[in-house]
Amino acid sequence: MPGLAGLSLVERGSLDCTGHEYWYRIEMFRLVRSRRMLILAGLVLALLLVLAFRALFGSAGAGAGDRQPFRYPVDAVTMRRAEAQPELELAGRVTAGRKVAVVAPFDGRVESVAVSVGREVAAGDVLLRLDRRLIELSLNEARRTLDNAELEIEKSDRRRAYLKERLVIEEDALARASRVKERAMQLFERKLITVIDFENYVAAVDSARLQILELNRELGQLQLDRRSLVNDRDTLRAQVADLGRNLDAAELVATVDGVVLDVQATPGGHVASGVELVSVAPREVMEVEIPWPSAAGNGDRVSAWALFPEGALAVEIAEVGSVVVAGQASPTATLIGRGPLARRAVVGGFVPIRLRLPAVADAFLVPSRALYPGDRVFRIQGEPASLVGVPVAVSGRVYDQAGDPHWIVRAEALDDGDQVLASRLAAASDGLPVEVANLIEVETARLTVEPTAAAVALDAASGGSGATDPQWR
Image (tube, rainbow, N blue to C red; front, side, top):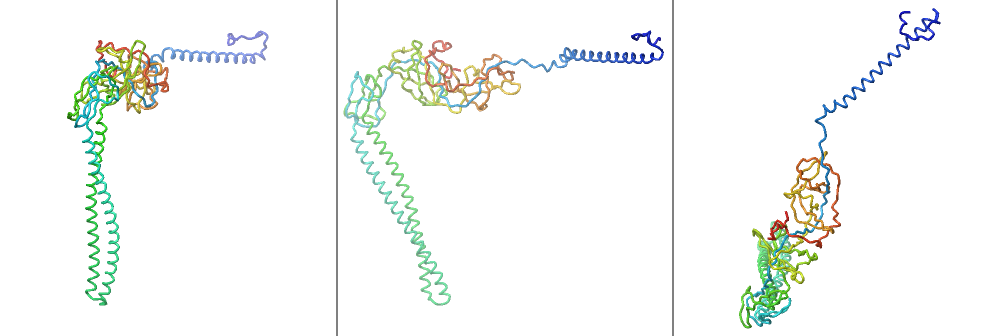
């Protein structure tokens, strides 16, 4: 049949008329099913092509603006509040040996002089003595006056106690007289007592009141007098203490080991308070002038070390000699060293100095690479993370056992747990996208306030002047 020309019939020539329709239907069913499978396969292939096209071209065109920017992999340090003792490094200028002056503590007469020019003295040796007799007389007189003042205060206290007892008695008497007066008034109204008797009761009440008023007046005056006595006693106590100190200071002693340079006192001569009497040149003493760091207060006494390259000698300096004057444009302090430190120093040269300042509380310790110019650090915050500059106040350094420095900073904008940039980035700025690749902790257990033995070179930028910035910023 013409309609079956495209069919593939098995044993087509053997079919009779009865089974021809049956096989025709079977073959038509197979043909329809094959077409459906072809259509379904075509749809699946088309869908796969569309998805592949979108994956290759569609997302690149539509999502080009959503592409994630490059993020700098950085190190970060976690902030932890701690108490630290800062150390600063600066250059000190070595000066000639100083002159230690011994001055008169008060006006008086020189009793004896125990030294002469050129004599060797040790700290604690007696240099001269001032006459103690006038001070002793004044001290004894002040003590007697003080004893009298104490007696007067004691008498005043006893009188006050007596008056208070009297006041209680008089107040009880007034209460009784008032009750009697009320009873007498009732009797008088009933004409059971005379006018004279009633007036006597009234007079008793008035008398008790007058007694109470007089006692209160005397107590008030006694309190004023006692205040005056107490003020006089306190003044006398201060005078006795000053005289006692002068009595102890009448024997002037050397404060350092050295040689007597000058004596401006003779036995029997009179001296005025504050006048230089003896001057001593210290032996084995080195003076180093340093710029006073702004992180230290005026008059603060700090520990200091001089660091020498040869052998890395680190010797503690004995004391801070000068008092820093507030308001100076460039305040300085003088360090005094003894022994091998003095022998190693060259007058007119410069020596690296490390200062240990008073402890700073409620501060953060950050690695040296975390501090950026302008005294600021970068906090890492947000998601995705970016940098935010935070200004900090730098108090100095503290060194760990390996000699690595950590800056001591304070900032209200920082808190425990904040992450701070600990990498050196030339492009570091507010808003810079970063990614924390390594989170480190400051090992406070390794931090020490002892000076390291590593040599500290002078700042080359000072040009040999030694005028390095005290803050090293």
